[in-house]
Length: 172
Ligand SMILES: Cc1cc2nc3c(=O)[nH]c(=O)nc-3n(C[C@H](O)[C@H](O)[C@H](O)COP(=O)(O)O)c2cc1C
Image (cartoon, rainbow, N blue to C red; front, side):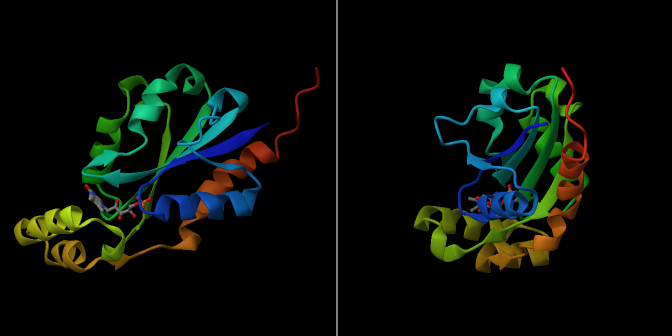
């Protein structure tokens, strides 16, 4: 069976996870910005997306490719500042068409925020958000950035992919 990783990110952490997963499994890691990114060619799909302002950045691409994604095995990994939580599950669910949400497995990965990579405007927005954030740790991370990238955390995704790789090809 043929699989691929389609990813969408803004500042490099989702791309980094996509490449780590690709290296570990041999699957191609395809940036959705590539006009040739076509999920129709694959039997199972790994979707990777950062969360920016409470939404998956891949959501528009998913909508545009819905017919090619439906009916296939799919796993979505999100990359965010927030850790696994009900709140994060809600952001993911709200970013996906309802019928797809029930068909998709979700793995939450921890990302990275490097203030030297964001615009002055974004830096200002993050500063304002930090002032109003009641969670002192989250507030500190909004203001100064963070790096929670963890290569080992891709293990459940590798195991998900391996179930397809060990499946014998159908004889036609
Ligand atoms: C402008 C901006 C908005 C963000 N909004 C959220 C958010 O709503 N929730 C969250 O958990 N993390 C948020 N983050 C943190 C990102 O999800 C995190 O930095 C992630 O690693 C970015 O992935 P990328 O490098 O692939 O773009 C935000 C980061 C930025 C720069």
